[in-house]
Amino acid sequence: MTCFVLVYVKSDNKWLMMRRKKLDGQWMKWNGLGGKIENGETPAETMKREIKEESGFEVIDWKLKGIVTVVRADDLDSALMFVFEIRQFLGKMVESNEGQLSWVDEVDLGDLDLNMGDCLIFDWMKKSRFFEGKIVRDSNNILINHEVIFY
Image (cartoon, rainbow, N blue to C red):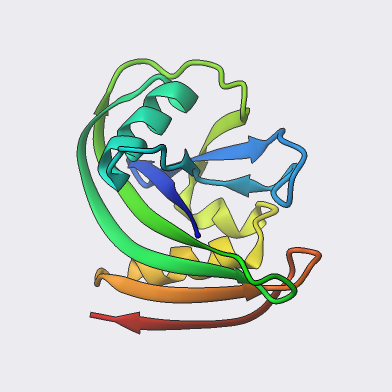
């Protein structure tokens, strides 16, 4: 099982979003920042490293919002995703090799080309409770099923 972090940075009712350049299932889609957990790292260490690498920000205050299992219906492998919200950070935003960074008003998130999994996660984060979710996608990265439990 692959483990990774998905990180949403929030400031003044705006979210830092990235339009991905990487040729994968997220290509040209908008989503949060993040990446794979490297050997020996905790999810929080990965979150801080990825934010620094992708945005230039130093994380000061954060919260682990939930954990999501992501499953490809045509594959036996799955991924475990730790979802963080950054509440406070220092530094100046830098250009990212991963994609285009942009601050997006919360009310405009629905206008972005997000995959349905990200839309679900934003909804789950609004509940202000820790969540455990599962997202099932087909071979074309299309959402086919989901479930969530709030604690």
